[in-house]
Image 1: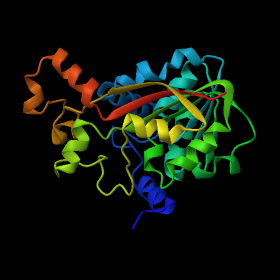
Image 2 (image 1 turned 90 degrees about the horizontal axis):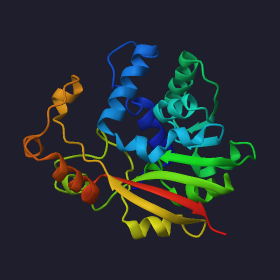
Image 3 (image 1 turned 90 degrees about the vertical axis):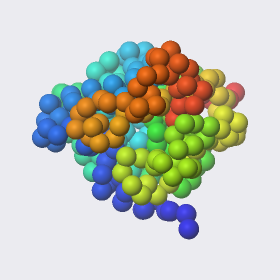
Length: 259
């Protein structure tokens, strides 16, 4: 039986994404600094894709802000930021993060499948969603909702999981799971053609980039040690990067509204 939105909310409320990326006191600047450092170290592709400096003075809506790692980067670079999140616990941490760093931001809690029931009738230069929509029971509804909030000349950037990926192959073989914590209710994966179909008829896909393979041993990683798996340890960096571009877990999509 397919999980419902309450199952998804319960899962992420129980353990917000990346909440264990620091052992420092939750809610402190030291905690948030370490969470950000670790996140961007293992997923450096976020920086190039997100283009945080580009949105200085622009209005940004993030659908699925989590505990606010991307959020704080948009705010730090001068964006007029709005965050939307299903998980109440995650949203509270993101709001605390903005308080700690002294940045303004607007935050809303709810189900993105019904985004227009929670947000004012406004439009944004960028709607951004990193690794979120594929966890929804109804991703198509979220796409339709997001289209209402993108300016005619605005941009929609999102990351979805890739079907044709190293991680997906390992999951199918029983050697891995979609998320760090066991039991994620929903984690859809997509091909490039399926993404174009998902975003149509509202959006035209401008670009799809593939990236990111997590190469580290899990137990040392939990202790803050970056020790690669043996099969990646001796792989030259250039070859590993080719592998990531062909079999990465992240499909990073840039889209525009259709005329």
